[in-house]
Image 1 (cartoon, rainbow, N blue to C red):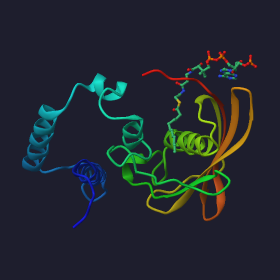
Image 2 (cartoon, rainbow, N blue to C red):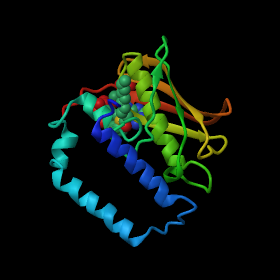
Image 3 (cartoon, helix red, strand yellow):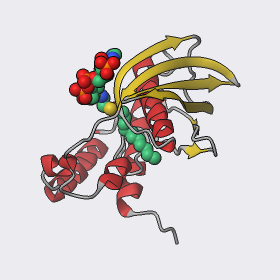
Image 4 (cartoon, rainbow, N blue to C red):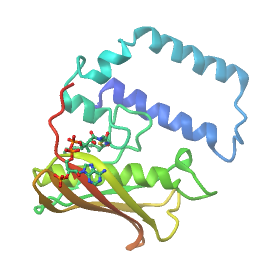
Length: 194
Ligand SMILES: CCCCCCCCCCCC(=O)SCCNC(=O)CCNC(=O)[C@H](O)C(C)(C)COP(=O)(O)OP(=O)(O)OC[C@H]1O[C@@H](n2cnc3c(N)ncnc32)[C@H](O)[C@@H]1OP(=O)(O)O
């Protein structure tokens, strides 16, 4: 028996579906009956969905619930890998990551925008781990080498310093221990009302 929640199980299945639809063997060609079956399942779930605005405004669930729906680390979000960040004693965040086909940019490699998305969250997690949560104001990305799909890489986030409401952080994606993408971010602390 697993204690995995049904929504997490469903999200994981949708991730696999997405990857399978895009897989080289399928070449994008899906059996029409199967496609109809998948659409029917989507209709069924859609009929059960609560109002989308309530969902994102936090009326449904909690802030923790919002993290569970994160497009990077949310187990309930089929778009997420999902990454599981760990914090060390200094508040540095790290997570292993293996990107499947749906994150492809250049053939065989991760899309640069996806790397930016991942690093934004890695830095945000590190800022939060240092008790300095904030909103992203600016990000500068340097792409040093391509990040391969289907291979384990390491994502890191580090809070660097703070000055008043401003915080600086750095995020990296490492391939075989070498920096492939480096992101410098400026974050601004802000009270958010949902
Ligand atoms: C385990 C837990 C995990 C937790 C994990 C959580 C993960 C999810 C989080 C992911 C992160 C995101 O995606 S966040 C979403 C993406 N970001 C956003 O939507 C932000 C949208 N922008 C804004 O809301 C706003 O522009 C802010 C908050 C950035 C700043 O507006 P403000 O609050 O009015 O502040 P303002 O007075 O203008 O500026 C304050 C100071 O910052 C400076 N400043 C402001 N913006 C900039 C800028 N772009 N570049 C340089 N400097 C800037 C100003 O010059 C000023 O400096 P001085 O004059 O004082 O020197």
